[in-house]
Image 1 (cartoon, rainbow, N blue to C red):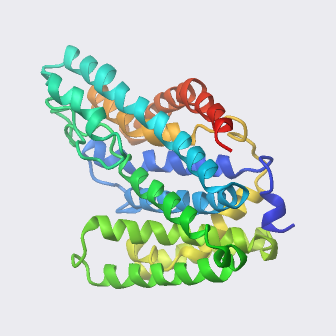
Image 2 (tube, helix red, strand yellow):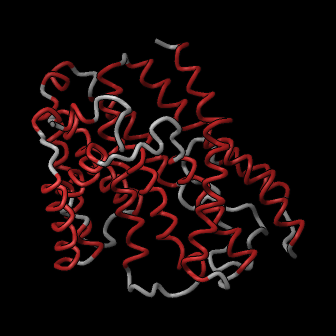
Length: 341
């Protein structure tokens, strides 16, 4: 079976893979949020970058299909509905529920002006204000409430750029060539900027790195009918990534791992028999609420639960809030997509 056939509808495991990637972000943040050393060296913490890379691959694949099936305005409206409502609600929950609750039960003194400004200043995805002043003051990573939300700006910009790029008739007809060339350019820039560490602002490096993974996901969409889904190739992709980790280190391996990671993410999505998340996609909610869930676990339990206990509790809390986000915010918001066609 080829990739296009396997991922043609929702009867696949790609949402489950995205759910696993969101959960790995929680795993990766555990030791920094707890304020303890990573017992695996850098394995746990580096998993977060790799999970985000995988997210962007899956998004690049899915969003390319969405753009090709839609006109520009319908596409843009759907992307707005998918990102903003749940994000805005998360900002409001932090500012007017979680932060006041923490201030009420700890020595922290909530700054009302800061709470009011938190959802307003961050409304357009760029994280202008990452704290609600005078809350979470005693934690190893103080003040920060939505520590994963910074990637949403880059993802939405990728939506806009890809949508515009695919408005060009030649690009739509020659998508594999066009997106392949763009991916090669972005990968080259990633390597060049990382080699000259510190020469570019983090925002530029993040945009290029994440853009490269988003673009290679788009390449996979255009080549989906020529890519065979094979368990042996999935295993080879995983082994290749591990070899790159060992040869180049966790960070530098990400400079070159676009092809094997793409095949691993999409191949697992196409071949795994698990359909968890196929109808109720809580991966976005897990990603949004994972960080505040972890901060609250540390606030209440410190390090007493241990690494494993912290992960389990944080995943449970994040899952409950993610389910609420999906059923109360995300899914209802998507119903408005029919108003723009």
